[in-house]
Amino acid sequence: MAKHVLRVVAVAYTLFLLVLPVGLIIWRTFGDGLGPFIEAMSSPSALHAFKVTLTVAGWAVLANTVFGVGVALLLVRHEFPGKRLLGAFIDLPMAVSPVVVGLALVLVYGRFSPVGSLLESWGLQIIFSTPGMVLATVFVALPLVVRAVVPVLEELGDEQEQAAQTLGAGRLQTFLRITLPGIRWALGYGVVLCLARSLGEYGAVAVVSGRLVDQTQTLTLYVEERFQNFDQPAAFAAATALALIAVVTLLLTKLLRPKDRSHGN
Amino acid sequence: MTRSRVAGGTAAGLGIAMLYLSLIVLIPLAAVVWRSMDEGPGYFWRSITTPDAWAALTLTIGASALVALINLVMGTIIAWVLVRDRFPGRSVLDTIIDLPFALPTIVAGLVLLALYGPQSPLGINLAYTRAAVVLALMFVTLPFVVRTVQPVLLELDKEMEQAAASLGAGPFQTFRRIILPNLIPAMLSGTALAFTRAIAEFGSTVLISGNLPFKTQVAAVNIFSQIESDNTTGAAAISTALLAVALVALITLDVLQRWGSRRG
Image (cartoon, rainbow over all chains, first blue to last red; front, side, top):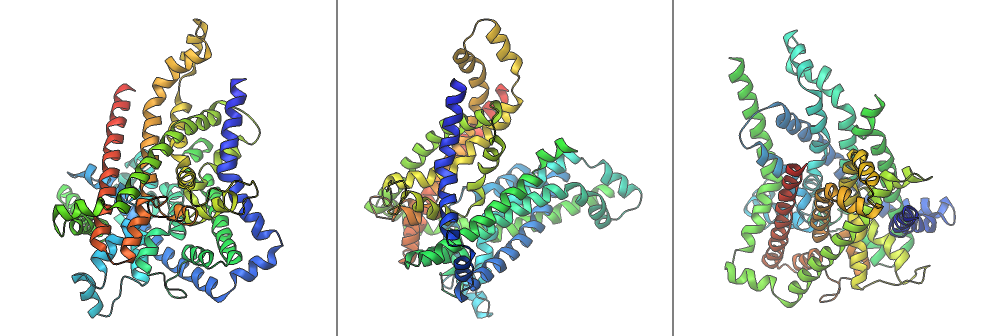
């Protein structure tokens, strides 16, 4: 009896908080078939926003993947004082509001700061432009790859890597042949999480992009701008596209999640 | 020889990592704190106690505390059902719990507005109320307690419960005396994480709360509007206050985790 009550409470809570709201918007978008959705998503503004989103997310994922693997190796395979502090710095972005991230970057790289004006005199504009949006996205998604790779590297140990090096493999060769295959699922999991976070970032990008329509407008900014301008079909279509990406991400992470795989192997 | 070469590699790697972190995270955050003190502590204090900023901060902390409590109860119940109950659709439930982590926050706000806004098919209109703020925060923080409690519950030894039951303990007594003490550290960690996430939240509240100053405007939205009106020092002051609250919550979390691991 108590068991059934708990089950109903858990299912009902998830249903009304998650499933029905997301389901409703997908239903509203596809209620009249695929046509209106495709039409709304192929407007020049929507396509441009999609392109900006992909550019920003692509660079941010690349940066965070290289940095993430490097720092994970540093944290697990190397000994140095201040390791806990470095770990705390890596997790710091999780506790910072996206708007504060945006403000922080504007204060350092904005036109009215010493660094920003120097860079601008070299012809490099950061804020209200793509580099700033990439920086903001890198900031908010920073810990994801590191935290996905660290536990697997720890579990893997370094015996195989040492054996390879004893047998004459160079560092790069050891990394490509031994370490990378060992962490590939965890890395995939981290990269997918990082990509989803990057595609969906709103607050930090809203501040640093200046929200210039058809210039620095990402898909999330497009959703908000269309909605505020009473263009519900366009807002709903873009939101549905983002929701579908989220659902795909969810299924991918389920497939790649390290702890689920270790049972299978 | 080998030893010093490895140490050299470590130093170089550490240097690059710290440079990267400094340029993107540490220097910009330090700039926020620095800017908030630009015109002295008196100005800082006046900035966070202007009526609209203070209303936004207290609403944010109050709503986040309420949402953290809701998560403490509901998250534990969901984790319990996922681990101990068997029913069709359980693994679907297990998968969609992570949806708030994957869904962009602006989309979260929009979907909640579709179901609980002026055009609600359920006839429930919460748009532009404080309840809407709480609802948006509930959505984005749902996975935290579930995902911290679930693994602990999975590892829990069932023999202790069986022993307690065979010695005559009722289900409630077994839960309170055997299960709950083991779960509390994880429950509290998840709650602290949900709280930190909630006080920082921006995107999901933008559309559904209406951002009405003194009523539904949360701290992040207040910061945003100060940036838009070029009051960066004021924005930096509220940001610093928000960072300080997050820091306190995270330190509490760290203490709780150590307390938990010592007990475990």
